[in-house]
Length: 380
Image 1 (cartoon, rainbow, N blue to C red):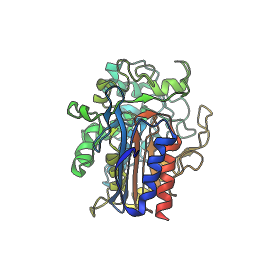
Image 2: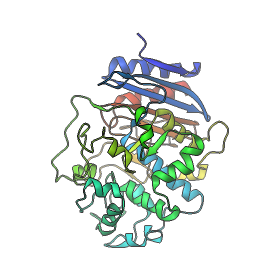
Image 3: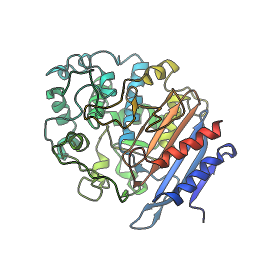
Image 4: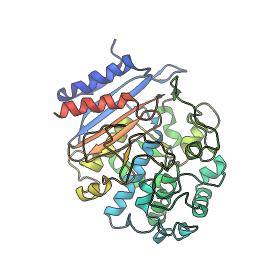
């Protein structure tokens, strides 16, 4: 029995075949994939169950938490400000946010933060959920933080700090928090269902996350990786059905710009298509020169913790990473989420792509990779 609904242009029929096969080959629950080519939507597929408790079906407008896919909208926003001449990514952050310079961060640039090289992947401050939700306590903690290494000399994934730090730069320049900037300047004008800070009115469309069996547990609370992912315990991970967990509307309501986006596949794919090609004949958000700057490799290899997942990073964006997330080529740029969600754009091939799902398998799992391979084959 067909597991999905939607459509795909004849040229992209292989994407529909792989999407259907994912339901047979993986513990898929609900999922969606959307592809734009040349600014035109060529694939929009969805299927399965949005809420396992009630049996509510996944529909065309279902939204899902997409975790660190949030870094894509935040990074695109920063590059948009750079294109407009309002942000120099290679100037010290302190030019825009003077208090940031404290405790050895005076030479840290926005590009260092976007490239996970600023030396502040986690914060020493222990904050409550309410303080994280209030924004300013996190900003004060970042100002007080001393880098763990000399900025620029090493890298480690700046899980939540990237979103707050770049988000505060956006706020200092525009007066808008990153979620508000995203909606005002990009998502609302283009009609894209992407949020960092989900309005209560959108909750009926939200899919409910479930945990796939066999995911490796996090190390202990003192481990740097756990501190990065949970902000020293202010957030739980994976922590789905607990207060302030990833199925709690209170979490989705706050601006958590490093890992708290909520979107549909069409919203994310449309965002990357808008950045790379423009939508439906409209001008593209980011010029070729801006994309060239964004896709220059900033970090790769083993990070500060000694892990090497094979990821390559540009300025806030995951690049074509054959050992981790094979994309289309040297001008592909995107970001993935902790549950296996993934979105990217490519202005050489003219593509915007997004896959979202509510059964969490993990970063870099094969579901999105198989769909990207299908897109690659369809493009020839």
